[in-house]
Length: 182
Image 1 (cartoon, rainbow, N blue to C red):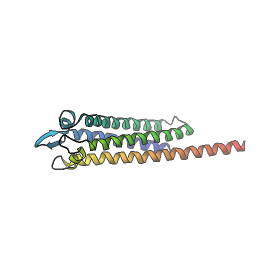
Image 2 (image 1 turned 90 degrees about the vertical axis):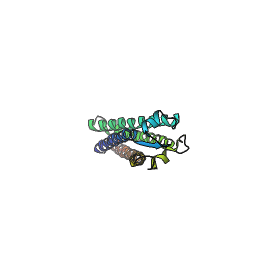
Image 3 (image 1 turned 30 degrees about the vertical axis):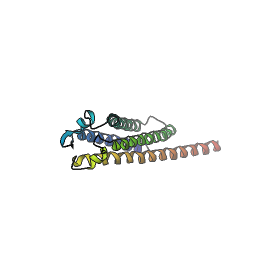
Image 4 (image 1 turned 135 degrees about the vertical axis):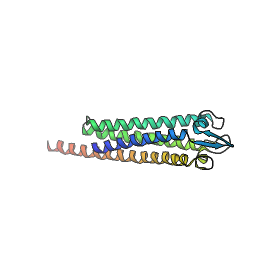
C-alpha cells in the first residue's frame, strides 16, 4: 500500500510539472484576434479583449496546479518515510482522497468557467483555443491535456479513497477478531 502511495505521489508531481510547462508555453503562444497578433500572456493580463474574471480564473487555475504539486510532494514524502502506522495511514488515505476529489472538482469548475469566458469579440476562450486559424495547435492540445489531467485526478482520488476504506475495514476486522480471541 505504501508503494501505491509513492507511485501516486510521483504521478501527481509529474503531471503538475507537465501542466506548469504547458501553462508557460501557452503564455507564449500567439493569438490572432481582430487582425493583430498578440501573446496569450498579453491577451489575458493586459488586453481589453479578456474580462477581469477570466484573468482571475487563470490565476486560480495556476494556483491549483501548484497546490496539486504540493499535494503530490506530500503524498510522496509520507509514503517514503513510512512514519504513519497502518490504521492512521488508512484513514489519511480516505481523507486525502476526498480532499483531492473536492480539489479536482473545483479545478474542473474553474476550467469550465475559464473556457466559457466570453471575449470582447463575443467568442468564448475555448472556441478561440480550438480555432487553429486564431491560435497554434499547441493551445488546443494544452486545453485537452488540462481537462484530461483533471479527469485523471478525479478518478485517482476515488481509487485512493476506495483503497483507504478497504484498508481501514481490513484493519478493523483483524482488530475485532483479536479482541474476540482475547
